[in-house]
Image 1: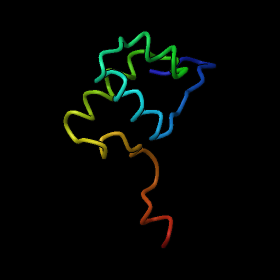
Image 2: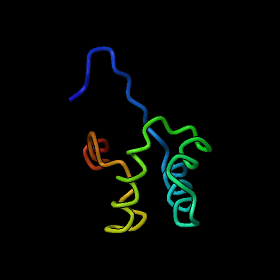
Image 3: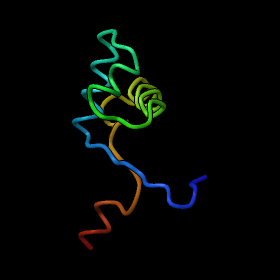
Length: 72
């Protein structure tokens, strides 16, 4: 649950792909987070799981309104 005053970071699809590639090359989560400026190391674990399950499409942000509803 979010805490009062907490700020959230969003990362581009390119950043997520670079992070996954760096992890697959053997870098540690800490090294990847420092190199790419990712505040929450736990995000890398989530991105890796989604990448393994769904490939690149798993890294796309699914929150908010879908593109279909934006064009209607």
